[in-house]
Length: 136
View 1 (cartoon, rainbow, N blue to C red):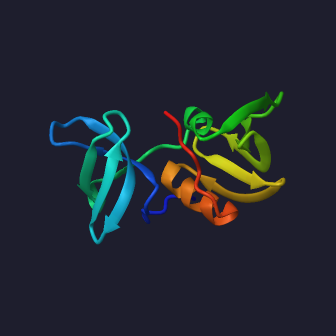
View 2: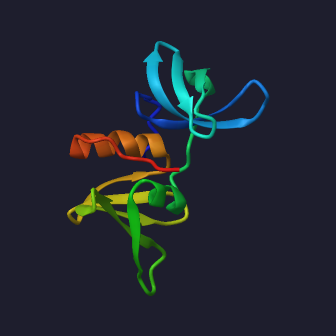
């Protein structure tokens, strides 16, 4: 269910820093049990161990930051539909959110359920050959 613990360059993850504050950063390098990245809020370098990483929950707000646009709320259904656009073009990837996870389809064919951003990023890259953009 999209809970991969495999992190790679480009993944967006969280961690608690030395001041006990939460940090969101983009991984730039993975080396054994260590990752190096760039803090999204301060643009500073950040180093952490893999066991210390905290996955970022995949939510409707996060989908909007990843290039999805809210399309419609289906009456009588429990989910909301988001469509993904890349360079202004619809690429056939849709997300349906519910209370626990995000269901992804490509050209109306089921792909998987996800609950974390990095696992979705990894599958998106496998599906398209492109990195999922993330804008704060």
